[in-house]
Length: 103
Image 1 (cartoon, one colour):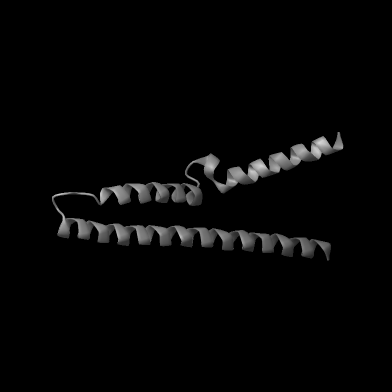
Image 2 (image 1 turned 135 degrees about the vertical axis):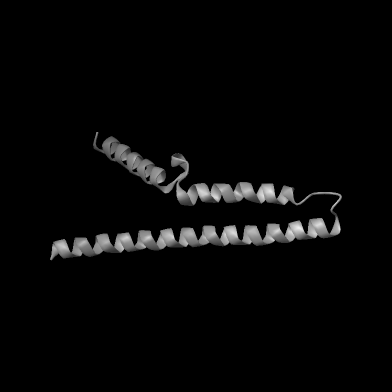
């Protein structure tokens, strides 16, 4: 009975992690879609009404930096920004606290 309970808790944890991951991916793809649509609209406005002064690249650059860091977090491009690094660090800190407590 105890093994079944542990398996169910493990499955529940896996389900929760998968659900969280899907939410992160959905958030990133929504962010990407809105970036593409709005930057395209800004390009249209820029070239339609003031082609002599190109300005659309400023919001494209600023928002693009934010989008890049969102991608880094979601896809774990740079290891110390990702969730794996956070989980390892949390475990490491908890182990240090546990060892300090027992000493």
